[in-house]
Image (cartoon, rainbow, N blue to C red; front, side):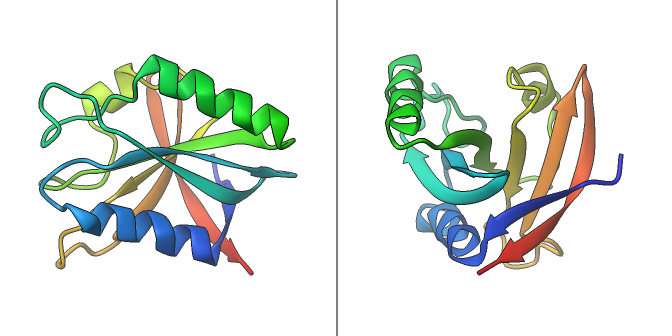
Length: 137
């Protein structure tokens, strides 16, 4: 599966800054846009019991954000989170919890030595496929 995901440069910078704001904890949030282009990022509170090793967005926050997307005529396009310690590729838990098969999953690494600090994946039916990231103005 060779596919690209389009995202505004400013949104890529914003989610990267979120990952670096507290590099010891996983950050997380939802991504929305129009016509398949990610134009907005919505940081979420990580409610995981161990936020250094996982992320969980409260269901009520997801519902509130989805309602906001509808009100603003935005499409829900993706989810982002960081991996403070390991590689920024989908973990077994990331794959198991990829409930939105149409969403793009961005995984960020706040580590300075990361070869690719931001990577994007399509996760469907227990398989993860890396996507190329196309930035737009």
